Image (cartoon, rainbow over all chains, first blue to last red; front, side):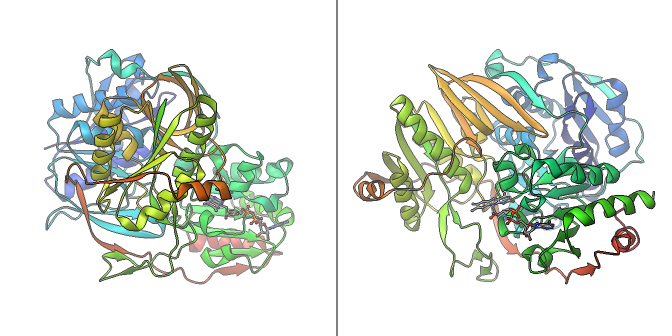
Amino acid sequence: MSILVYIEQAEGSIKKTSLEAVSFARALADKTNGGEVVAVALGTVSEAELSHVGAAGASKVFHVEDSKLDAGVIQAHAEAVAQVYQKVGSKTLVMAKSSLGDAVAARLAIKLDAALVSNVVELPETDNGYTVKRSIYTGKAFAQTSVTKEHKILAIRKNAVDLKTDGAKASVEKVSLQIPDTNFATKITSTDKATGEILLPEADIVVSGGRGMKGPENWGMIEDLAKELGAATGCSKPVSDIGWRPHHEHVGQTGVKVAPTLYIAVGISGAIQHLAGVNSSKFIVVINKDPEAPFFKAADYGIVGDAFEVLPKLTEAVKAIK
Amino acid sequence: MKILICITHVPDTTSKIQFTDNNTKLDKNGVQFIIGPYDDYALARAVELKEQLNATLTVLNVGEAETEPTLRKALAIGADDAIRVNAFPKDSQFVAEQIAAIAKQNNYDLIMMGRESIDFNGGMVHGMVGELLGIPSISPVMKLEIEGDKVKMAREIEGGKEYLEAKLPLVAGCQEPIAEWKIPNMRGIMSARTKPLTVVEPASQNVATEVINFQLPPAKGTVKLVDKDNVAELVRLLKNEAKVL
Ligand SMILES: Cc1cc2nc3c(=O)[nH]c(=O)nc-3n(C[C@H](O)[C@H](O)[C@H](O)COP(=O)(O)OP(=O)(O)OC[C@H]3O[C@@H](n4cnc5c(N)ncnc54)[C@H](O)[C@@H]3O)c2cc1C
């Protein structure tokens, strides 16, 4: 019985979080029946790019090469994935949590009469029933969740499993589907997206700035460090509220929830609502001039000091070890 | 124009989360319950649409009697009437089926809710309702304007946003900056007491998942501080101890 993975692309490259989903599915297959992992990709992607999905653990990719699916039209993507799922005869669909993934997964749960579990943080327990550990209360707790339906959809959180890179090339099979026009009733008229940036939800390292950065003109220091580390940049809510930084960089309870390997917080006090979005990070570094800032209690490493002095030194020190 | 706003009744964002009964129930001791912050954004935008389009706003919660003060607060902010589906919200599918059942009876033009609840963070009820009703579902929506039967929206995507157009009816999962949270005024609070709040029994009992138990993350160790004049030491620790560089 194969596991199907819905993989997302951005500008023709498969997203890293989707590759993690493939590795998750591979580990799940190894743990249960040892079956195949197959993936479905929608829209324009090169065959070479698709075959790389093999390295992460898939043996085959079904490619629905319909340019109407280049844009992430929610209903159309849900319909396409449902059709491929039925064609494969799978019982489990795995995907990465994302803006589009979440919206598509919910519709799929109804279409496929499947149990959807989101924010999955580790491989399911399958010895005695089927239970999945998921993150809840915005990272403040976990729920061990039992799934009773035959069909399952798992939307996994970043870093739920290590990315596999040693698999063989995947074969690519083109499929054409009949997707009724009603699924394209919502029109995406334009996109306004940062290019060339490392995206926050995908990043292994995040450098984030708060109100302590004093103004948008000082973000060059945050960006310099991020560039040196290959990191994405983030910010606290007031920083995006005042318009110093775009909304998609806002981290926390009401913004993006991140789970990077390293989160560096500069001039952020560490309010509980901010912590809620970052407490799944593996390591946290805090730079704050106030030794009493609550963020230090949630940190692994810290420097008590003025960001404007510490940041340039830190960027230099990172350069020095390269 | 009829708008349905679905709200959750969740612990305040500053709550310390703890569990009781062998880690099978939330410990509500000392916890204050609020309208979910994302639902609050949806409600705030709905109140603006009401003023602009002369819409009627119905607010809905699937929950037991304890959630009524939260519904009354939504009435105080500007909803016209409230419906409570009298049941513990067992899982997303259960909640979505209740919302869809109510929507089928009342033909709302627009169904709004938060992008996700802040207790279970599933972010799936809007999509399930859309699929159950066979209408579009868009989330997370950060801007929503209505012109005739056309809805213009901005949806947040990784690294930016995309602009969409769709026709009513549809379901929107909302987030900031769609509108600013509204605080009820005295007149709102007074009038909320007499606005209708209808209690209905659940239309179905289906669930897809069940929580067996809750767990708390392991406690963080104490922070290792590095002197501000020895920044290279931090980089050394990140490289050799944490092994993240
Ligand atoms: C319902 C709700 C949801 C919320 N959701 C979020 C959310 O998703 N994300 C979020 O971030 N917040 C959220 N908040 C807001 C949150 O409560 C805090 O107000 C916010 O996180 C504070 O941002 P900050 O740390 O940047 O600013 P401040 O609290 O003002 O902290 C600034 C920090 O910078 C330090 N500092 C100042 N100057 C320097 C310097 N030169 N060098 C070094 N350090 C310096 C100060 O010591 C201070 O600790 C939410 C609030 C509510 C009520």
